Length: 126
Image (cartoon, rainbow, N blue to C red; front, top):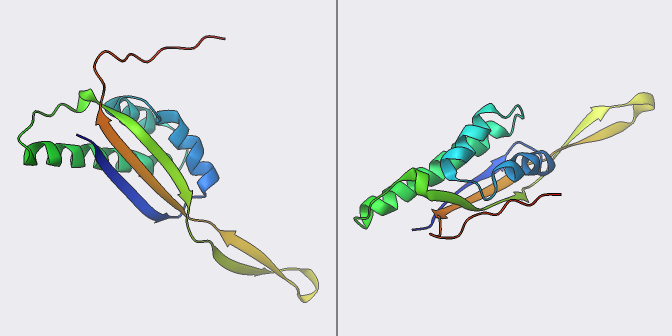
């Protein structure tokens, strides 16, 4: 059973959030949480909480439909970062001018689903 979680208006730039999201796309859900726990980027913590929330949503749905639930069976099926609204701020600059500061926000969406049995992820070698 597929479960989804999303966070909106996260004060992390989408470019920096995408670097973190790319680490866990397609991984096993519990492995993704472990990877994000040790990732040094500041966006790793909110993304980790989001993946944990998606796992909890999957558990809730499994309990609701009286199905067995094992978090190790779930994989991060889809995860993407969209750009949220940008806050505009100004800083004084030389000769009476004002410089614009753009404080960007992100919307992150995670979908976890049970792994398809028999479909193993192949490793590409260079």
